[in-house]
Length: 582
Image: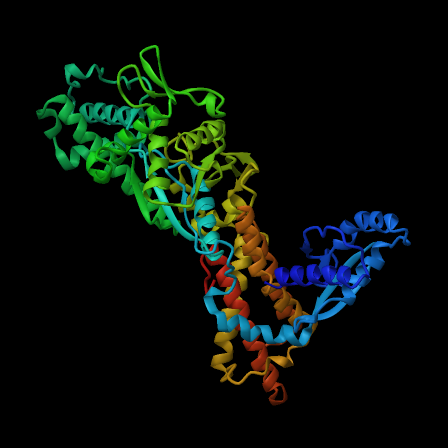
């Protein structure tokens, strides 16, 4: 990237200035290359002289030499800079900046460079091929997903795409919570509704009462719908078998219905997982034969050997506080059943020790933020580096319509389901809006804005930009124009230069967004790029019927094709469609 190359050149120039005696030998701070806020300050700004000035003048004072101003330090660094083809103008500016403008002849040639890279344009090598996992989604398969959970899906998938573009070997994973208390309560609720629909009492040994959902059970109307699906498919079959057997089969049928719905919603949102990991497999010896037992058994042995467990009130506890956790956690309940946290421990043992991921990101809602200390303690107990696990916390979503908060589904009168919003505004608008704010910011999903087909709707504005470029290219072809043999050196108009400059920002955006885990940079860049193209289209006639403009038409068609490629790549990284027509 230009930014990194510039930083290295500035650093080497400062070191050379020290070797040549024009600057005293002091420690050189990290060189930060930034984008200036004002165009007249060039394409890049470096504030290194301002960071160095105190140490420089301290050293000069000790050597009894005159002080320097930051401008003088900047000038002495610039004097030692090695030229590069992309560097046009270098200026020093008060109070001590080095401002660099890109060479416009070099800029024009970058149209061909972008097209030659193709769909890989924007990729950077930040990860060096490191194996990593992004685990996201992972909603309990006990009902439809809430719209707020869509943010988990969108952020996780966008992060995975960004990190893959940044050179990581990324695996997307959904953790299926198909074991434990919540699934048991879900099965009981579904069984009860099944019995009611058939006009029968629940089995006496179940302890369930007709019409009374068990404590902690599931009340939603969807449970009745799914129970009706069981009646239609299975008839009274589950009433003719022992209760425990019936409950097992109802649980499996209900789980299959839930997972089918989750997979369908993910598919609609253009989310494709590499692995759907079953929680049950953690307790299955056959799932990990190399361990000589289940993953759970292996983890319990590790915790015992490390003296991380103790007994209290008939339960087995994990001594998390001894490892920096804020409270100890139950791993085996007094009834002998595994606690929720031990599944987390076993699951992460599998991720790091068995599958060998070097870095794992767990995408969690803000309601799980309090669990972070115990996860660090877990990593310590497994003798893993806590830095290998990143807990990516996002804030909740508020759905807004007509200026009012939407609290209930129009269809079911309960939570606002993800599918309902997908049906309303579509997956592209939903994904764009849900990724457009920083994850640690509360966000409003404005349904009225998302429905608009105008420039006020950011996803419409960006997609219209791509469709406009496609329309220009189609029109050119219809008129017999091609970009064959284009001479891009003819591109010199300020709006052409601005568009090329904006396209060249994508690798920097990818690097920054991946390094900081901030996917919201993508939609903001997409809007800027679309606006820059619209300005180019306003100022520069792309397809001219004047034979004297034939060469310029070819060059501008080439530029339009590059802009289409970059805009499509940006949308793809967000999982948003790039339509050729609207």
